[in-house]
Length: 151
Image 1: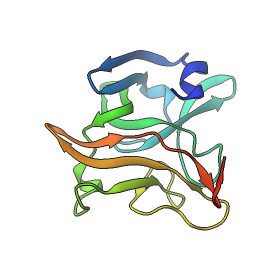
Image 2: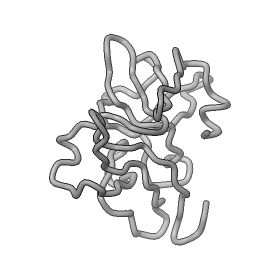
Image 3: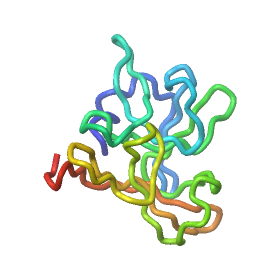
């Protein structure tokens, strides 16, 4: 389990383990404005308050993934921390059914089908496309690599 989950849970409304999924629900006010379903989030602080930002592969700090937004309902953001999820199919359309997706360095919160390669960027596998019942992706944990070094 990520250290940000263990240490910064003040804004989590509910966390559950359901079969092959670990989920968290946070209030919409605790999430960066403009966040949508499919965005990859990291946990940090805004002032002295725990807050969820869109993650990016631009640095070790920015790439510390908390989870992936499955949906936003009412005033709550539902985040899959690990396991099966219903990822927006339009964001992975056309990819092979076993495609891996990596955290994007170009656009915060997004994934791409190849690992970032420029020096200083973090290669972090976040999703794997997988069809299991109603689910179409799996949120996975992976090591972070910067220029081939484990960070």
